[in-house]
Image 1 (cartoon, one colour):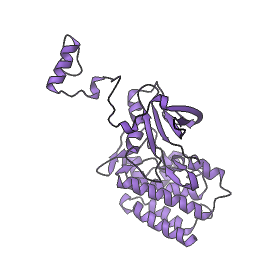
Image 2 (cartoon, one colour):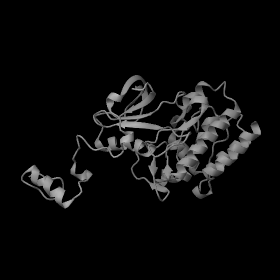
Image 3 (cartoon, helix red, strand yellow):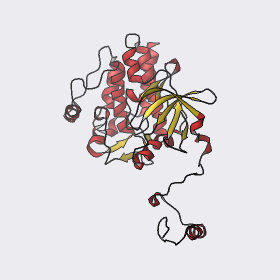
Image 4 (cartoon, helix red, strand yellow):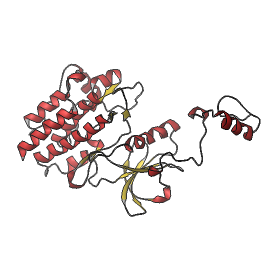
Length: 310
């Protein structure tokens, strides 16, 4: 018998005729894979032949990341998905592209397209010249001035305010997941853990790898993610920025840091960190999510601090 879901038929033409006449929807449950699907949004669909892979830039959760070149000689970053991953992880891999194609902001990394016609699947993104922010901070720590660190922080706040306006919860904001572009513009990247939620809160029950030192207590304890939990992570990002790339909660394991935070411990400001920035960090780390500042407030405060340094 031939069937997608429900009624079975003795031959394929009968099966097709049934679905054509009844307009019965074929869902993911059927396990059907379309060999030549009609793209829903042709703007984002590229073929594997459109991109030439170059040097390996690094490894992500789903596969390698390469420098690539498009036919028009544009340099791009190419995220690849391991062919042997389970189907649910391949769907998660494409989640990042699904989210990014809706966004256009100078402080958010740009999606160029996806290659899904064959394996391995590619996500093509703008190539951001300075690499990841964490490595940048550590490499340039002797050169970076206070004003530039505040500017990076302001860029991050602007990007996060934009995401908040789109009901996007990032869930993994950290220096390692930001990129540094031309003219030292910071761009938020790595949307592999992100979710778009109309209600503003995302409940997670099965997230396997949680970045504990960057994650708000209510997200760790109850799986409740929101823009407020992203604000907590922003406070940790500020600490990373002004410590010039030191790992948060130095000398503590993930578990120790989690227990200390529950007891009320908060990291002291890094050496040479302005008091105004230190106060912002502490507000971001308020145990009660509703007491934390909004990204709009953070942007305003950081703008004032930057002006004072001009």
